[in-house]
Length: 454
Figure 1 (cartoon, rainbow, N blue to C red):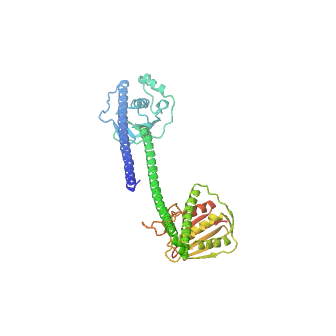
Figure 2: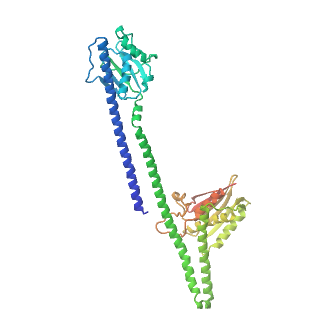
Figure 3: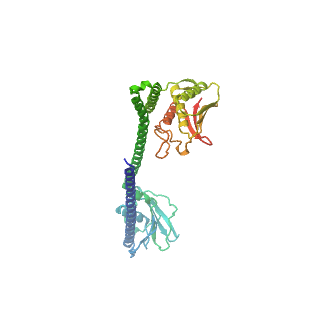
């Protein structure tokens, strides 16, 4: 998948998710606004009906001739508090009954509390707090005995309310505009909205899943793109690394096929040497790839032995020097020369040292100078490799151990390779239970430190 295609997919997916979020927000806001309007209208209508019932009852029982202010008997004081101007005396028992009846009629399933304004005390007198399950609610009687004329009808209401509660202090605010009124508050008003928009919660949950899936998809696309680039670079490097020795072997083979080559023993020997060297180079490259494949499949079995670092490291450095031709470099060994024993796989441990020394020489613009130190304390043994190479920028130090990774140098890599060396080093060190880190070697170069627990 090309970069332009990946970019198009990411942009399109991002716009789709943003569009879904915008639409979701738009509908959710409209739903909340509609529920707000519906609640206010239903509450207002219910309270108007309650006021009407109270006045009609007083007119019938007491012979009053009052009427409800049809234009605006209900006033919203705050978001969850309403006052209702009755303009007549209020019977608490009837008020609670009518509130429950009208709220059920308007399908207002929400907790509420009410209070009645006391003209003599000039304060709100607490009535009751009613849950949405109105059938189980009791009331708080706060009215004096009624006349005998209403005993028969009021007895019907008293049968519905048998339990009594103590009078509570009322915190509901008063309203100076009216004299005979009651107030209704909805402390748990948010529950009403949560019930109304419950379906949107499921939609939001689904949206979260979509966004998570979108993020996962983008990460997979980016990983696939990175893998594709890594594979492309690896194939290019592999082709180049194999092409050079194959071309050298082919050329040498053609020269050796000439019958007259026997007349020139020196040329014969030179071309034979070239074939041997390039064959070994091919074999080493193939071996690196096979080693990494073995490690990746976790089939590698370490053959650990007791190793004396004071003997093993100098011998490995000596073997490394004899394995390279035509390179001018200097490797010095210093540090503790006494016997320091560790448990490790000799073959892979020596390969680790080979790879670190090989990188120190390849990535050096000057004459390579490498210092190898063996250090120890009570808890650890350290094998430190200091070089005078080009160094490793801080932002790349965690990436250099990645498979096929090579520090970006533009379109041209002056140093040939597959980017497998440090990946191999990291995996072998981890298999041993050790640690490796890289730091600056002032004024120039890098320091690779292998830390081995004692």
